[in-house]
Image 1 (cartoon, rainbow, N blue to C red):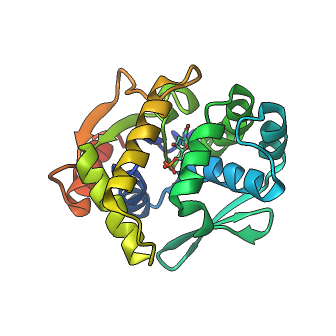
Image 2 (image 1 turned 45 degrees about the vertical axis):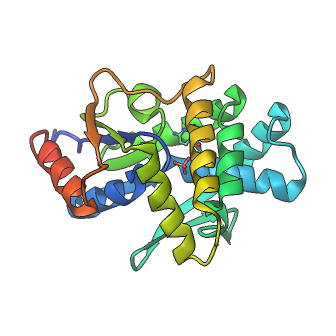
Length: 224
Ligand code: DC
């Protein structure tokens, strides 16, 4: 029997470059890329639409349990379709990021999404990014990366990204929002953001995206 493909877990704080780097690695390896943050963001968006408060645990969990996710490539864009609706852009605002951080602190919501995330990694051959992938979702992943960068650099990247999308938010506001989310994600009681003991720490503060992808590809090749 042939050995299944390896799994790669990429964790770290917001705007450390996890998505871009994980996507680059997945493409080079022909693996599937799974963005678990997008799932929490989608739950937050659907709660807002339905007028459900982000801290109303039973109601939020009910929404999370019934969402149908579809991830698909459209050229270079990874489209996220939830219950048949393309939410790719709508989930990327600072407000929905804050909501995602709030709903992700609820144990019932995490339990709902955990099952789905684990099943996606069952066959191997995935690069999954989030906060608890190496510690909880895929603890047996063959390669675990903890991707980090200084707060001011992450804020700059996120700010630039928002300006490109035509959202003129002040830099200081973006930085404060990220700092708030870092603290909430690291200090929550359930499955907080932390580096897995066997994860490789990669700081991208002085690294280009290409450099980070090459670095992780070298680590992945050693395990293939
Ligand atoms: O990676 P992101 O910014 O899209 O994630 C949005 C929020 O979702 C983040 O603040 C914390 C939460 N999250 C989580 O708790 N666990 C994950 N595996 C992924 C994201």
